[in-house]
Structure formats: structure tokens, C-alpha cells
Image (cartoon, rainbow, N blue to C red; front, side):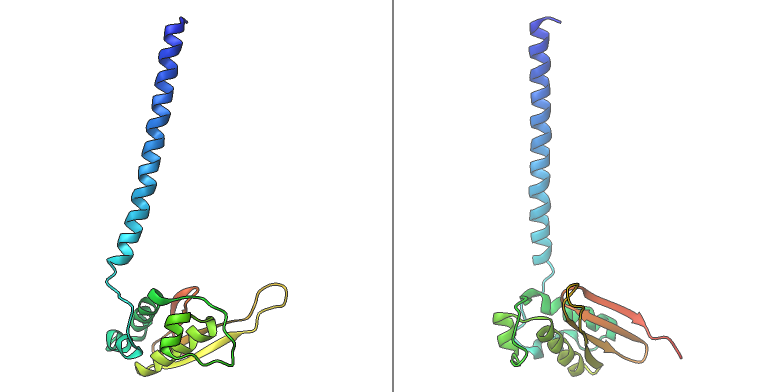
Length: 161
């Protein structure tokens, strides 16, 4: 092949690679902007009080109420290891965050205020494998839900015994 043909082919390859690069770059930017926008479009603002969350999640069944609670708590969720001797108020947990214990107790409290049965469950962990963890459970006569700010919500039908 002539030098002119090689130059033309090299120019074409460089142009093609630059085009693919621009497409990938704009795709990356578009996805990130879209994700940010979709979280803003969720229309869930940070609650001012526990009562505001209760008002927003009332009159729902336990499954929908569980998802509603997590949706209203997540905007201010901050994981921050906390001394178990501290009992954090709503304002304190909003400002400084808390660990799984603090978030579970908040979910339990809100669940009870919504009229559901509620408790927390503590997994003691296994030394050297995984640490202890706590999550909340809300239930009624048909369903129960595990509310875990780290793993979200999982709901199950209660089996008739």
C-alpha cells in the first residue's frame, strides 16, 4: 500500500477511536446526571420530625409502610458507629448519624407509632467473619418486613401454622 493509503487509514482509525471515546464519555455523564436527577425527583425531602414521617406513612399496610419509612429515613442516613450507652434523639440521629442499632430503634419506634407490631433483632456475628448487626421487624397479621438501612426492606407473608 502507498504511504497515502496508510495515512488515510491511520487517520480514520484515530477518528473512530475518538468518536467512541466521546460517546463513552457522554454516556457516563448522562447516566450520572440522570441518577442524580432521579433521586431529586423522588420528591422526598428530609423530614423535620418523627411525626412528619408518621404522617407521610400512615394509613398504609405493613409492606407499604415499611418501604415508606425507609424512603423517608434514607435521605438523612449516615452510618456512624455509636456508643450503645447513648440513646439518640431524632435530631441527633439526623445530625450525626448512628449505627445499625440506632437506625433500627428509630424504625421500630416509627413502626409502633404507625400501629404495627415492631421489634429489633440482633445478630451477634462471628468473630473473624462478620460483626454483629441489628435490624427492625414490623408485622401485622398477614405480613412481616425486615427494615435494614444497610440492606433495605424485605417483606414476607406470614405462614399459617
